[in-house]
Image: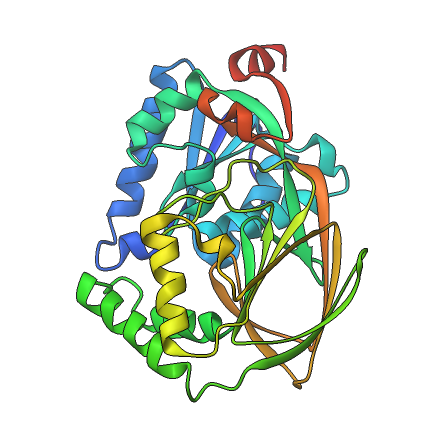
Length: 333
């Protein structure tokens, strides 16, 4: 995949045409790409766009970088953003890659939310035009990049069922999915795992475990948020709940009171490095929302300030490092 010289010093817009938002709307992806280019140029930012499938987004990002793109605006979900970030972080000069901007187009869009990115395309471009460039931490599991979290156990199985209904989720189906989660607690076998960090070794039995790129804030809401993507630590959450009423208590603490981290059956820890051994031949997990199969030995690492990002000015407190105003940096080349 090659880009011509017209891509140099432009904002390259990459739209995931396979995103769930475009199910049944084949022309919507092109319309969004044109809309984003028009909005960027209206703000004095020369741009060009390309439609890609989820499988080719990373290659397109690498090609645009090699062609001299000034910045990358990626329209997709959390899994798409992680794939592009992987390509940028694995490049020969990972610290010099163009900054990445995230336009939310997925189911949860957790990273875009943490980076204060508006969902409306015009509002997002306006915020970026007056935005900043900086860096955020990057997590890896067995070398694979994640920007949000890796989830092991029962939640990963629920995510697999959600993927089958991609593009068709309704409040009723979300409710059914939650009910299945509660009823599956009794019959789903708990993971037996050994966790090794800088602080020592811990043996646990759990239905679900989350390893996040920086800690979640303790505030109410179905979708968890992070107040910082630059603390330089993985956040480990092990759910020791084994009865449906305990899971219901956790859900209420998450959605209503925001006290879920203080749940008596929740084990929390921070680490820069984590190794997890699981007594299974393979383990199903979600990596930034994408369902994958992983080996029983998992090596987690946190790379501080490893990814350049282009974000609205409101996101400065979240960054690991602040490089400057986007317009000044783009103008200086």
